[in-house]
Image 1 (cartoon, rainbow, N blue to C red):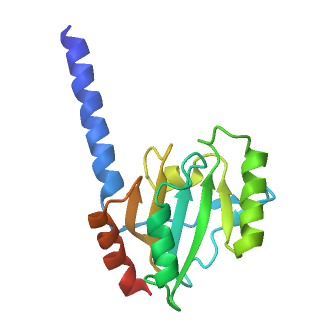
Image 2: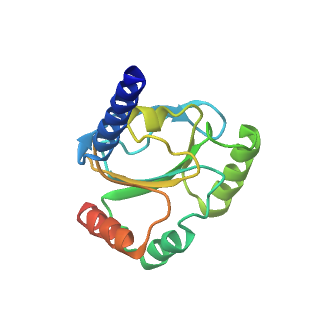
Length: 172
């Protein structure tokens, strides 16, 4: 019984340490090889040239922050010459076939000109220590120096939206 209790305490400590590490910002991250919509190897665009606004999205929840994303697009709150935004589809956690998700993303790209890449095997979430991103719309900001300066997973309340805008404005 003592061994079982000790194991539970050790696992809980490990989980807390991993969560704290995943949330400490800013922290250096690296440009990760992902895929384009044709499943060809691709690197993240504008790395080191611009500040990056990245939407890392599980296809099951593409509308999770829809109203807020629409707001920042329509108002230009985080647009500027020093920032570029793009999407990365989290294919590993998708319940839909990857080829279907790629086709939908390709149609959206053709419609609005957005840059969309694909992460077929948790390359981003693993390399950047994001933790579990299943069923989450993740919003990130990475500065030109390759530092993750903002990350939020899931639905954003109004206070979190304001924290995001405050983090993004100096990067514009």
